[in-house]
Amino acid sequence: MEKVPMTARGELKLREELERLLKLRPLISQAIAEARELGDLKENAEYHAAREEQGICEAQIRDIEYKLSVAQVIDVTKMDNNGKIIFGTTVTLIDVDTDEEKTYQIVGDDEADIKAGRISVSSPIARGLIGKMEGDEVTITTPGGQKDFDIDKVAYI
Image (tube, rainbow, N blue to C red; front, top):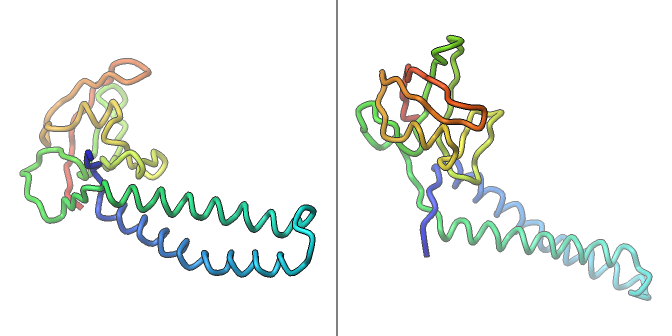
């Protein structure tokens, strides 16, 4: 089974969500039991809604448990990479053309959230940055064309 990289923060968020879902399980079972007491199950909307919620909850639990089982948690705060960009690092880039500054953290596919500044390790930008050093200038091929960036800062936070 191939391991999937994940940050320590990503693992924590998954574990919190799993805990929430596991606490929800008995509540759903109770709702099903209460709906059964109402009689005819064929036309019992509460029963069908509770069963559907149970199915969704169980699917989410299985999905999270699988993700955790294949996760390779990488905590960059415990590493010293001398300015080299690796999975989990936070990188501040300066667009050579516009002098616009952008900061990204390179994370696993499930953790990516561009609005929060977290990009997937498999994204074009992350692939173009991995292995580079603070102070390097890089040309990255993005869906919008080639972009030149100066790597201003690399942080292991």
